[in-house]
Length: 148
Image (cartoon, rainbow, N blue to C red; front, top):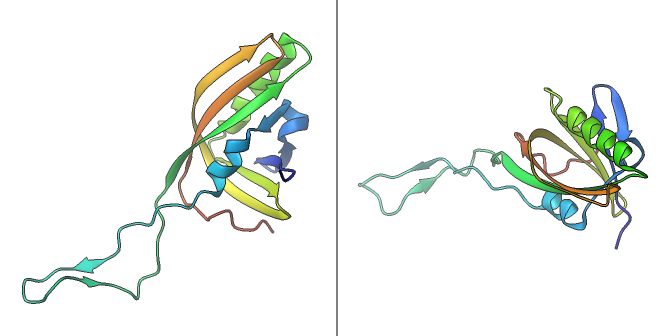
């Protein structure tokens, strides 16, 4: 399995998930980010005077926004630190301007601008490990355009 690192851009500051929040993405989170986006319905014209329908092939392909859930794990030395990591993470993800996820995987750097929707699942184990399923919306998918 490839080494995957993830940071988020909050305002003007990049924060590494592992060092800032004790957090890492689960294996399925990368797959959710890399999944292709759905295409918006193409412009068509259907006339009763012609067979079938015409599809506009001159218009550029547009993509639909998408909702995705990223599973994350928080590891901390004690319960107080775990709660602080969780609070800080959710506060930063809730940024009104969205959060840019910068993912380094397979020798590529990919970026995704996501907006926090909710934490659909939270479970903590022994006060030092937590699992979160966080739901996001990507309003303008760019298919992980290479970061500059």
